[in-house]
Structure formats: structure tokens, C-alpha cells
Length: 297
Image (cartoon, rainbow, N blue to C red):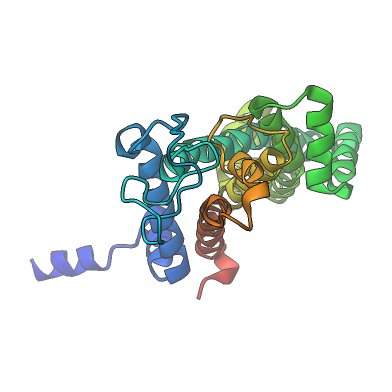
């Protein structure tokens, strides 16, 4: 019995357990993960947690200050905007939009980037040169400026803004996937699978792709914060989500003329963007440290 118990205690950790242990040792990553879980729960439960509908106006409480400030009310904890909409309710519903934007942008750019990167790294030749030169062109342009140009061509709107940000983020996934595919293609397990009769599609999807997942997961976690920030910038410029949508960047745009007389209409949406972006960056840094063998202590 003693030997069995000792063997159980000495059993090697699974890759998932090892990553989780590394994350638990990183306070910044835990803090980011906790903030993301909290924001996600608020976003999912917004219809039930929010005290008011995000579009509901009240002409008796224009620019009402937060509850703790003189003139404020517990009925509107974070105050109201210029047309009497509750800021707390709009922030809660805006979290749904921001997380949806981040996840959708990362999903689009990651899937397209993996497909192009795998083909470029596996096929090589002229196709690889064409894809990588196109990605280099995208990377040479300022990301926000390129997104503005794309939205200006397609027209303002949330869907077009998401597509523009996905195009801007695409080169990172292409380059990471291509580099990982080139590094893995020459290894023994790929050669063995090829000699056993595996086709090109199986080699790419079954043998090589799972071993390229670690850097892609890290990039995806960091890419969500970039997507949220770029989408908020487009919303602030009037090119993203359109009023009366409670998207955080649009809320900032609506509040520009009240910065001096009503600080809360700008501060709280800005803090929401800051906290969310910081949380995903902290989690991304923690995942990078946990998944990269060179950075493990």
C-alpha cells in the first residue's frame, strides 16, 4: 500500500496540470484570470444584473453624478449620461459587446491565419512568398490607420469594424503558424507519419497542428485585448458600433463634450476598457511563461 501511494504521489503531471500549476504561481496571471471570469459573468448575466435597460432614458436625471457624490442617487450608482441613461447598466451590457468583439475577431483571424500559415509553411515556394509578402505589407501599415481605411471602404458598423480588426490581426497568426510548421515539419514523428502513408492533410491537421498550439493560444489571449482596444478606438471615431449601442468606445465618443462638467461619463467606460485589456494581457503573459519551456523556472 505504501508503495502504491508513493507511486501515485510521484506520478508525472499532465500538460494541463503543469500549465495550471505555472499559472497559479504567477500572481499577475491569476489576477487577470479572475478579472476575466468576473467580467464574463457580468456580461452573461447583464440582462438580470443591470438595474435598467441600456437604452432607457429619463429626462429627470440628465448627467446625474455617481451615488457617492453630492447630487447623486442610489438609483444610479455610477450616474447617468447626457440623456438620462444609467451608466452602470450600459457598462454591463457593453461588456457583452466587447467580449463578443474580442472573441469573434480572434476566431476569424486565427482560423484564417492558421490556414494560410500552415499552407505557407508546408507548401513553401511561390505560395509562401506571396502570402508572407502580403502579410509584410499589412504589418508595415499602422494597425489603427489600416482598420480605419478598411471600415471607410466597407462602411461604418460593428460587423465591418470586426472584419477590419481581424484583417489587421491576421499577420501575427500567419507568421506564428508558418514558423511553427517549418520547425515541426522536419522532426522525426512527422517523418514517421509520412513513411507510414499519411497524406498531406493528415500531416498538417493531425500531426503538426496540435504541436503548434502553444504559441497560438498565447497570441489569441493577447489578441483579444488588442481587438477590444482597436474596436473601442473605431467606436470612438464613429466607425464601429453605432449609437445607441452601449459599446464602450461609443460611450466614450458620446461623452466627449462633457469631459469637464461630468467626469463620470468618460471615466467609467475608460476604466472598463483599461481593466479588460489589462486582464487579458496579464493572462497572456502568464500563458506565455507557462507554455514556453525556455521561460519555465
